[in-house]
Image 1 (spheres, one colour):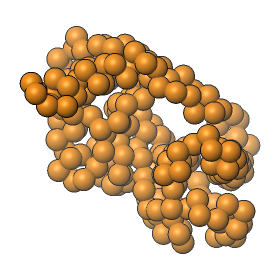
Image 2: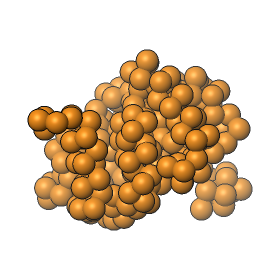
Image 3: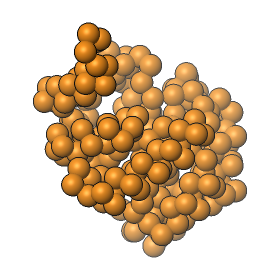
Image 4: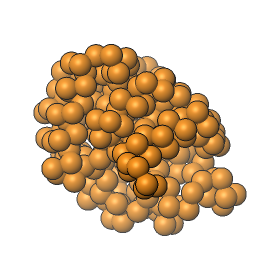
Length: 213
C-alpha cells in the first residue's frame, strides 16, 4: 500500500487516513473499557508526510483529549524529513512523544536517532531474534540501553517469540516488551500470555533476591 501510494503521490492521504482511523478505533476501545485509561496510542506516521493544521484541528475536534496520548512512531528505514518532524512535534496539544521503530534495520540508525530524539526506541526483530544465544546482539542492545537511559529514553524490544529471548532482554535492561510470545496483534487488546507473565515474574523475583518480593 505504501509503495502504491508513493508511486501515485498520495502518501499524504494515507497519513491522514492512518491518524483518523487509529484515533477512531482507540476512542471506541476507551469508551467500551477495552483499553487501559492511561494507555498511550502509538501511531505509525510516514516520516516524509504530515497533516495540515486544518486536519490536525479536525482530529482534535473529533477526538478531544487524545492528543496528549499520541506517540508518533517513525519507521527507522524511512527517510526522515527534519522540517516535517519539527512540524509534527509542535502540533498544538500533542504530547511531543516520538518512537523510532525498527531500530537497527536500516543504514541511518544513529543519524535518525539523533535527529528524532525519541522517547522510545524500538529494537528491530533482526536484533532480538535469538539474542539469548548471540553475544554480538547482546552487546548492541546493551550499548543502546546505556545510551538511552542516560538520556531518559525507553527501549522496547520488538519481535520476542521465545521465553529465552524475553529473559535475555530483561537481563540487559530493556524497559518494554513486544512480540508474539506476549500477545498476538488484535483489534481488541488481548491478555498477555500467562507463560510470558511467568517469565517476567520469575525474573523480577530473582532480581529482588531472597526474602524480597
